[in-house]
Each structure stands twice: as C-alpha cells, then as structure tokens.
Image (cartoon, rainbow, N blue to C red; front, side):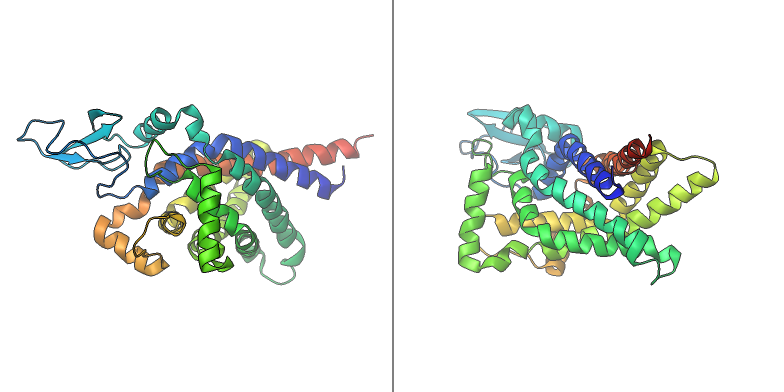
Length: 337
C-alpha cells in the first residue's frame, strides 16, 4: 500500500477505535462540567416542606448526584415520586447515575456524532500534522520547535472546521434538564437550528474560542512531549507500537492536566450557548472564567479532570499506536514480495 494510503487507513482505524471506546468517559466528563454547584431543577420539586432527613439535619433538594457533596448536608432527590437521599462519590457515582437514568447506552450518548466528528477530523488532523512535521516545517524551523508548531497549526485548522459538529456533540452529552426528557440528536439539532436562525450562522462557531484555547496548547504540548519521549525511548533501544502508546499516553496526560481549565470553559460555554433556557447568559471566555472562580472556586476549573485523564491517556496511546503501528504494517506488507 502506498505510504499515504497506509497512513490514511491507520488514522481512520485509530480514530474509530478511540471514538467507540472513549465515549463513556467523554459523557461523564461533560456531565460533571455542565452540572452547576448550586441546586438546580434536574429533578421535579418535592412536595413542600418535605425532606429525606430529620428536621434538625440540613437538606439540599433538587440537586443531581453529579453535584459535589456539601459538607454536613445530605442530597435529597425527588425522583419519579420517591424522595431519595444520596451522598456524592464522584466519578463512579456519575457513571451509576447516567446508567440508572438513561440505561447503559446512555454512556454512549453522542457516540454516533463522535464517529461523524472524530473519524474524519482525527484522520485529517493526523495527516496534517504528519505532513507539517515531515515536509513543510523542517526547512523553516529549528528541529526542536517543529513538533510543537506542527501540532498547533494542525489543531487550529481542524478545530476551526469541525467546531459546529463539536457544538452539537457537547449539547448532546450535556446534563439534561430532566431525566425524563434526555437529549436526543433530533432535539439538539432542532434547538441549534432555532438559535442559528435567530442569531445567524456565526452562532455555530461561538464555542470556537474556548475550543482553541484548549486544543491548540494541548496539541502543541502533546506533540512536543510525544516526540521527546519517543527519542528518549529510542536511546534505550526501545521502539514499536508499545512505545508509541506509552509516549502518547504520558504526553497526553501531562497536556490534559495543564489545559483542563480551558476544557471546562469550552464545555460550559457551548452548553450555555446551546441551551434553550431564557435569561441572560454569560458566555464570553474571560468573564465566564471569572464568574466560575467567584461563585464556585478555583477547583471548579478542574471539574471532570478524572474522566478526562481516564479518556485522554488511553485515547492518545491508541490513536498514535494505531497510526504508527497499522501504518507501518500496511506499508511493510506492500514492500514484501
């Protein structure tokens, strides 16, 4: 197989496997990031003066089990006519909540959209990065800067093109207003279409700023770290798909930790923009950043960090291992007599 076709097939394979296996982590991350700290009507109101605790124990009503625990208080949820009490346990509780409310398939909410977005965008992204890394930028930049610049340019281009589909996916995976009325692709598209008609086509790119703030630094840091780690492994005589996987996972984790606040801003802003709720919406990047810190504290900028890391580490490893391993295998097969 021709080298370009081998790389195309390898990137498509990696993108498909990554999208199918990592979607549950993406769903949980998005739910955690779009669940405000203050109580909100994710569940119907309980009867007046009703609490699931004795009168002398503080009670918080109408709060999702995805919300952080309030010290000394018990979360009370009026769910399908039953007043339940819950203590929040974090990531695993988020998975349990989604499964209970929407079934096991709820963890794959937006998987179809992820495939529509992920496969072509990741494929184009990998091929663009590879071309910039090996052809375009080496004559123009010092070798140490080539991976960083290639990652930045490739991600800026692809994120700008795919921003409208990313908006749809974020809304589809975000916390629904009610467990009885979950988001569907049809309802999300109808909502986006209505707002687009009212505000114009540029609405579809309103989440692009935070997306670029997250993806561009992540991409530059990821590729610079990946190429450095791969060189270090090579000095030890190690190579192959397993080295690519380890380098990608380690570099992806580091980049994710450094860029997590921008991921929260991107998710919050796109969820707010796609919301049909009335009233003023604070969606500008830096005012939204100040508001989150003021009302929820600095730790809120790292909401969903566990599922994000749990997704990014294997996702980066799978993607780059497939790209290099499958591509090398297909090219080698063509070269053999």
